[in-house]
Every structure is written in structure tokens, then in C-alpha cells.
Amino acid sequence: MTDFHWLSAIFSPTGGTAAITKAITGGHGHVVDLSVPAPVTPVADSTVLLAAAPVFGGRIPAVALERLAALSGNGPAVAVAVYGNRDYEDALLELSDALKAGGFQVIGAAAFVAQHSIAPTIAQGRPDQADLEAAANFGRAVLDKLAGPDPLTPVAVPGNTPYKDWKGVPFHPAAGESCISCGLCASRCPVGAIPAGSPKETDPERCITCMRCVSLCPRGARTIPAPALQATTAMLTEKAGVPRQPEFFL
Ligand SMILES: Cc1cc2nc3c(=O)[nH]c(=O)nc-3n(C[C@H](O)[C@H](O)[C@H](O)COP(=O)(O)O)c2cc1C
Image (cartoon, rainbow, N blue to C red; front, side, top):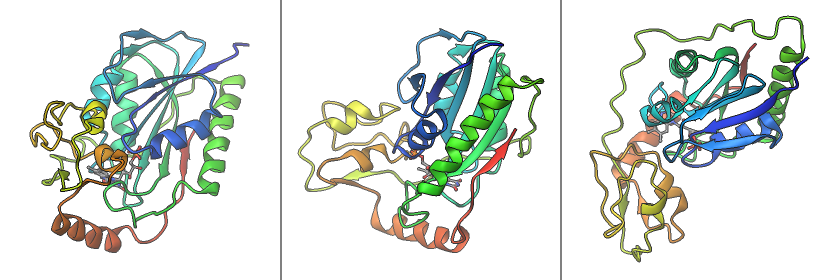
């Protein structure tokens, strides 16, 4: 029997996806951070690849999929989508399809809820203790499946093709008066949308409104324009009010 090791490939601009992933693996194994370009990485058959990303508009952020493509192998993989309590729509299917295209055998998948990174009053405080326990249970169930008689049985995940159309949100974070141009946001932007030399600017062509700069600015200087934030929060309060629970596919 093979002893499997975790390898997590994570895109997590504001940390919700990373928290879920850590609970799934119990903090074991290596982590590939997809918020920077991933080096070409062959993945051993004795490794279970855990690919995890947030849901943006019912899809997986394109940059996460591009970077995930640097990992290739024939062994088992698990797809995890983390969403802000509205819906994950075609995201899990898209991530699962991407893993298959990389040669992996998708033996499990799960959708978890985390605080909405644009509108933090939605799913506030998630993942909570129950979410993290569910994530740990999912991780154990994956390893149990791998130790069982049919470890590589493929799993079906919900979603439709063609995937939901998603062109991004029409608003982007902007720097306010309290910005001191320290450049932290520019150094951590996953898509290079903030020029290092003038971090008060945001390139709207590159920005995917992932909210990392807003969440990490030590002075709270980067924000979404108030009217856009209010409208998004109002829409989500209506559409994402009832707490949703983790879902496993094994
Ligand atoms: C641009 C953008 C689009 C989003 N679209 C959705 C969505 O379609 N459905 C949903 O439930 N949550 C959506 N969310 C919320 C995120 O999926 C959720 O907050 C996730 O936990 C963020 O992951 P992170 O903390 O790892 O960055 C969106 C967030 C952003 C920034």
C-alpha cells in the first residue's frame, strides 16, 4: 500500500482558501503558492495533489488555472473551491477539468464557505470551527479512500459546460489619503496590477479585484469605491443570506 503525501497548490488572495486547505491536510505536505508563477513541477504518483482556489463569478480565477498547469502528474488529485456563501456554480467542475487536463485522476472534490472577500459582512467569520472540522474530515476521507480497495475511482462534480460567463467585476480597489506608498500591496499583488514605483495606482486591465491589497494594507488605505461596495453588499445580502454548508464529493 502506498503512503500518500499531500501537495497543496493554493490560490488564496485573502486567506480563506488557505485556512480551509490547511485544515484539510492538517498542515502536512508542501504548499505551492499560486499567487506567484509556479515553477514547472512534476508530481509523484505517491502524492495527492490538493488544488484549491476561491470562486470568482462562479468560476476559478484564470490566473490560478494558468499557474496550476505548471504541475503535472498521473496520480490522485482533489479539487477544492472556496466561495463566499452565494454559489460556486461551475467552479468545481472547472478546477476538476483542469486537473484532469494536467493528467491527474480526480478522486475527490469539495466546496467550502469562507467570508466574502469583497463584502465581509457576508459569511462573516467563516470558515468557523465547524467548517474547519468538516475540512479535516474531508482530508481524512480522502486518505481513507486512497487506502481502500478502489483508491482511484473518479468522482463526478456538479457544474455545467460551457462554464458560466465571467468577465470580472467592473470596479477595482483604489488608494486613499492614508496611503504612504510603502509598496507592500505592489509586492504581493498576484497579477502585477499595482506598479511598484507608484503603488497608489491600479491597472484596471490587470486587476482581478481579488482583494488582496485591500486585506493586507497595514493602513487600510486601499478600498473598493463606496457605491460599488454598497451595491455589491446589498445584492449579496439578498442572494447569499442563508448560511451554506460544506459539500464533499468522494
Ligand atoms: C472578484 C470576486 C468574485 C467573487 N465571486 C463569488 C461568487 O461567484 N460566489 C461566491 O459565493 N463568492 C464569490 N466571491 C467570494 C470569494 O469566493 C470568497 O470570499 C473566498 O473565500 C475568497 O477566498 P480567499 O480568502 O482565499 O481569497 C468572490 C470574490 C471576489 C473577490
